[in-house]
Length: 323
Image (tube, rainbow, N blue to C red; front, side):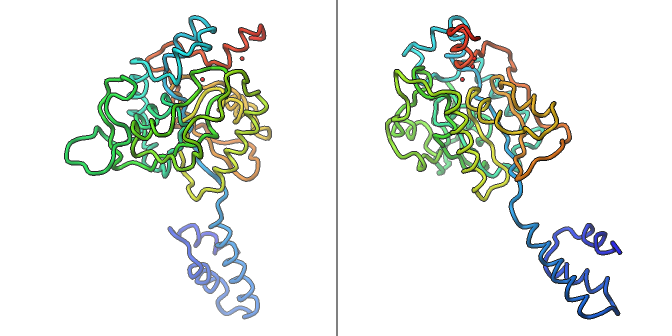
């Protein structure tokens, strides 16, 4: 009675016609009305298979920034305007290079349809370094993802060829307010640095979200994170890379996985290391468990200081909370 299931499994790309053919093979010489019923049922199953039921997210925290180093030495440094929109350290760029090798050798990058990035210097440097094209050379007419020496990095320009599109999204920024390292530059400046990144979803040229005297609460970050993932769900792409920050990822993802196995929930509720990659599948209903991911990347290679500013806040307040 399950002959049609085997036939379906053997079909590389099932279509309504293939479902009908399967039904005809199974119900050959049988009642015509019954045949019509099951043919209709199989066609409806095929339609359901076309509905988007999951998103596979390759989630990355930015590589080591100068604010991580200074904040690890002294949490008060996060209040310094010397760290405004901090860029990557030389060690951070080494972390980017190592993660890029990982995504290439593990074929992570092959299926990615879109890269979403927080519009801060350290996240955009990480995103284009990991998922962008090769070094930009003379004769290429396409705009580069990143111009040379952005953030006084000494790095060459990065091509936008042979890589997915990049979109900057405000909703996946780090905790907003108080810490100058989490304040962004104008979009006009960023467009000059990262010509091929799409900034069209950002409404204001200047940063109107960051306040010098009001720090976004953890609950507000969770709410913003849920809105971000709801927006993500509505997109047509199923394979998406997200490059963001420790605090945002920790609080946004901690609201998921309550119906998962404890080991999965524990991983979700762990802060990301610098340049760590985790593979996250978001579905429309809970699952009991899943196989161990084979493309995760532990980050901090090479190892370096990476204290996130939210954890620094907790230390300063006496409670002990990490960008």
